[in-house]
Image 1: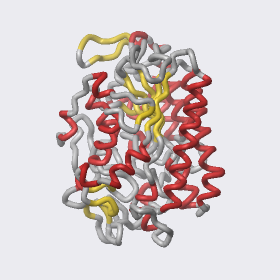
Image 2: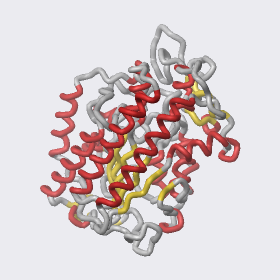
Image 3: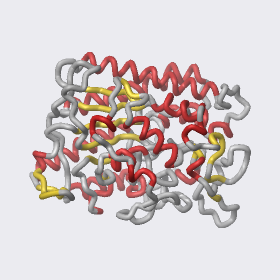
Image 4: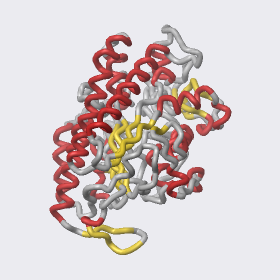
Length: 415
């Protein structure tokens, strides 16, 4: 998620020229994947008798899932300077392109399944391997195309995927499998391809931060619009052949140092989070659950399986019992420039300004929940990934760790 007042993340280049360049790049990409109709799991939501372990993940979202698209498309405006990336070295990637000190949830998912890190759509010419999926998420993206922080909102990301798929079908090329011979495009996605749209935080933040709208107005207007945009995206993907989905809600934004700083005078809940901001996140989660229920009914009988990931309550569990998960600081940003919550929108983490004080990172980011005041530490993402893979805060219950014999060994490595 991006806060409007965060100047270091403003995307002020010619966005449409960048978009056209990215599309031209895709025309020459040979290592691409394609979605074919997918064999679904059992129609009985409580049964896993026909379950098939994920073979690939297609990812859509914002800065909580962006692993390099913004950096590739806006290399100057959204460049991330140290100490971003201080906790993990991606050996196959120059520089760093994640809004964290290390890995994101999708990176831990890749490691658990022994997949390569999922290649980004905008990095197509950099040798990305799309055998196990691809990432279409962009920092600043919103669900309903109202934030204008980036042109790559959810429906554009879905369009990019459809273009990606079409190019792959047209080429008919083979692409490399690091564990075996080249695989033909048409064999890549017979089944086991999961789609992960996790987006909506920027829709809500723009309404509260930039427009200064009260919670009831945001809940009445922005929440249903964002949920409807997710529903449209899932329907479009379903019409193209997708059958397996993980749909996630947002973490509690009222617990972020940025929101605590901006709205410090508002009532707090028992966790010292901004209560009305979190009420918006809860409302969005409820709206997404309704979308999931509606789509399950609409797609009944065709093998569609939609799992709901409750990132909000998974996060609340960590905020409520931080010591259980190794955290000692849930209120302050690890990387910031002072203040009660170590957040200042004028001098954010990694903001290189020669005239002004620098921003330093804490010595132990693994004990912090918040990284830069808006985004989270890799330690926090690691725990959310473990919740997800172990079937906690997932509906219907699905323990991927047990079903797919996952290995978390790489979760605690530094490169």
